[in-house]
Image (cartoon, rainbow, N blue to C red; front, top):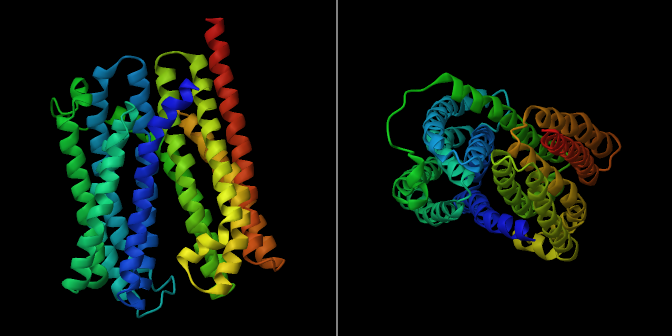
Length: 441
């Protein structure tokens, strides 16, 4: 219970911060939707491209959190500053690379068969928002070092700050100055830079970081620590990208079934994504707790930390499943007023209620494994479960057998189930190995 309380306190600001990030995407959609249909379509296309940047940044820079947590647990806080300065170099290189990659995406719009009238505004949106890529990478670097020492308050503060700033700034640039999609993209980029700058100032002023020496000196980039961060982070980035790709591919397949199934799918997946922020936040907190236990060489605390996270996730997922089952129609009605869409979306939420458990467990197991700096096998497991099990089964049931959106969602459920079983088994196996080794020594 003590460990559950610690994990809950750590996770709560992260959950709110994640929900704030999702709310920013909703603000983009609402502002574009009230501008005109072409702009809405352009933002949808550009937002899909931008989501790739977010997934890669989250995954690769997630390596910072367990690395810092293990140093913190080992009472080697004086080494965190040097690691952090190399992480900044990694974030700058990653952000610059993603800037050029995002700006190259519009050259492939014709090959993607994007509607011609949407392309100009989609290109403008992407070109404007791309300037925020370095800021996004820096923000996750700052955030992860803070979460690594178990100080998650700024995640909440700066997540809400971005949410508060985006709506008025986006409205002014989009409507008052009539910049359209490019104005909205510029608003997102400006907010990201303000969040990053605010976090930087916070790191220099907040007493919690005073003994870390984060900015005590200038360090040139050094390949060994950067390579170690990449060794941990690249598999996580790829795994998160492949998981996101599964949901994007499912949406594309549902899009073949007609307007109502696609609208219902988007409605249900939006609500399911909101509920997923809770186990995701708990998993991030568990990464810190497990990493701290490893650093302190308290190998029995590794399972205590994981058990606390699993318990919280089971409680939250049970509440989420109940909400989706008993309030599905009401929730769908908040998103759309179309009766056909509400009916199908509420039925899809029954499937979403089922996958709350495997989705929560795979997120938790991934979080615990990150705390052990184990990322390569989880990447293999994730890709295999989603793309060798989930996607083929969903395609077979939904498209080949004519089950439609429910069949595709069954594929999601089985993919998540396989991932949750294998990832949980791997964590239990590795944590048992830590305990046996400790007892032998």
